Length: 622
View 1 (cartoon, one colour):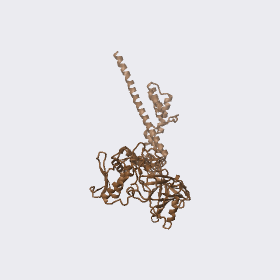
View 2 (cartoon, one colour):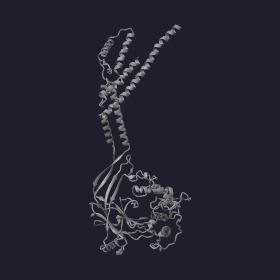
View 3 (cartoon, helix red, strand yellow):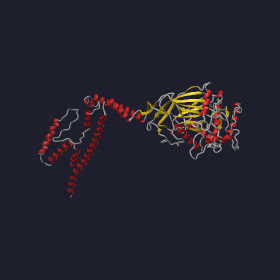
């Protein structure tokens, strides 16, 4: 019994105090003594309080108050009924009071209980849907307009007249002869009349070089009903053959010639420096300032010819055509067969500073004999990183070895394709840069590189390669949009003096050191020169920012709106629910502990009651 009393003191409950005093009175009666004064007084007080605090039928019982009892620091309810009644009566959640007020009417009580449960289910379904939307991390595009003075972007111009390397002139002559045979066999056309023989007289020993004449241009009539033209490629063992075909014979002839041309250039990687630069920019100025040679970077592209990149160093303070970069360019006669490039235009591309121009993917053509007005509009995009999307600052976090100086997505895709070429074909494609220690593809060193290259190209076009996923977009990207209007230039009356002035300007060392341009004959003046004017249409530019649809404050606000809609309560109401949960947990533990102690006490009482009978039996036996 002392253990039970200690448990009551531990729980510090009024009910336990009454049980303790009643137990003491019973012990006095069993001892043969009359109840003490204190015991009689407490018994009368208990009976009086039980009569005074008697509650109506159907209401939860109210515990009797013990005289002199002070409220403890932590007190719990004596039953779950009392706990729920207290919560429903005092909480700020709407509707719960109806469970108490409607207790005499069971129909209303059940109806309000089901209504509260249904409302709670709908609330948490909507909150779950809201969280699902948040964890998808959707974004919206916010567009803002800014205005400030801006630097001109870089401008790259290529004359689309690739120069044939002198060290490979015999190889290219053999290729031209092979191409003439293929075109004549298919279309009965002879190039010999219009062929340029400028390189045929270059002295030098003819190398031991043989074209792979098995890869020849063919008409394929057995591939369905559609007429196709292409060429056949096989692997190193002669198996896995396929035809790389086109429905256009012109496109097939260009691709076939381009393949053999890249194969020849792969023999001597240094042939890029071997070709001379064609100085085709005749004039350049911004307002009244002339462009200087340090503003230009010259390079030669194997298929686009001689190229100039004008690094924008002029800041546009005002928009409009009066504040423009003006360039006058010329187009020379193409050398060799017109299969590598069939364009007579000059390719122009606008791009960011220090970015590599990829003219095969972007840019516009400038036709000789016209003047083009090209107004610019600038857009900037700022993307969110993880978890809202995947982007990169520079090449950070990209597992592709970048072969260019600055990161763009196109530069990453090209670098990734070149890396796959090195891994699968053991050589690199000549149009793209090489990492240190690698070799360019050529049939002399890699007999089946064409088969491997076109297989990879087909996989890239079908999006079966990993390059798309390995090359994220930049987190901050600048793009330029331009529109062009054209007019004939120069006029017939002004052509002579304009060309005379341009011929004198080309003696200046600022653009074309050591070279003088011979003006064309009057009858062919417009077919050789063109003029392009580039300017900002307006100094305003659009800033497109990605913003999350649900930020953390917006998510909490949406959840609070739903909670308020269905229960008309606030954050403190949620704390009340947490308090109810804690009280219920504590009450469960205490009641379980009390039941456990009661079971142990009953077992010990039963064992003590059986011990005297055992003693008497043992004495009788003695």
